[in-house]
Image (cartoon, rainbow, N blue to C red):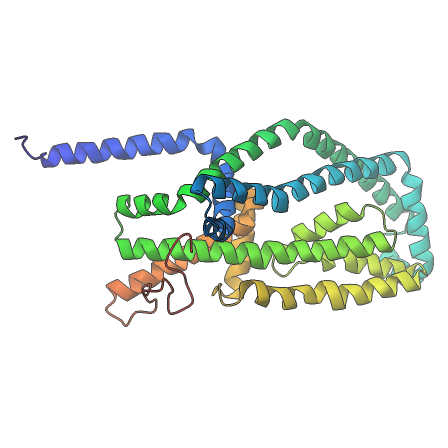
Length: 372
């Protein structure tokens, strides 16, 4: 009968476990974005997967249908926007680089419409000639930037399709085997099963809430903005719609950064009907979309204070790029949850976070499973 391992042997094995795990994660570092978005797709579409399974289909067929649904609802529309934006970026570059006089003519119209503003700017050394020089220089810089971005978008197409294939492939296995993977992680992690259940539940809860309450609302606002731009014959409606979507992901900023100055310009240059329509539409439709849609899509799923949502989103953008609008708030929720567990279990005070009940829900509306 083999002798039990000594303390030295256990410590050596744990060191080996740590080193090999770290090396494996370092090897996967180039694919972290792909893994992250496959987890997002799995968490969002697992309810559909379970519904399909109730139709009597096998797990593999149900997972394949689920991934195809995600392809149809998310990836194909995103690809369309990707190429449309590239086209409109190219057209904008051609206009800026080949016809700077158009920008100067628009500046003259604005000067004539707002002479008081021109006089006020002139007092600070920004006279008409200096403004024209600044706009011409800005047009050259912007056109160069757009040219580089257009080339970058075209050159990244092959990599984009490779990443897409990886995301779909990983998403298939995460949808099909997600519950088994969650069970294995709970078994392997050394933090205590009930704590791990709570962390997984909050992770899934906040990720779904962030995608539904932030991404879908931002897409709705950007889409509404793009539609009104197209109806008012403003150039590049898809491009401006995408920019409004990205700005709507940032708390406090929003799509008004785009549509409000455009409405002001239209009113100032005598296009009163278009300006008034855009202003009213922006306030009553785009602006209220957040207040109407967010409670419906999120409900009680997210408990973060507004200031923490803002800081975590901006911090996520700074550290993780575009993924930060999800990873930032999710990390903030995990941070708050871990501190709640600490206060409940190590300070001797009454618990603030309840454990999952028999039906899988927490007292605060949380979910007791990664794939709830």
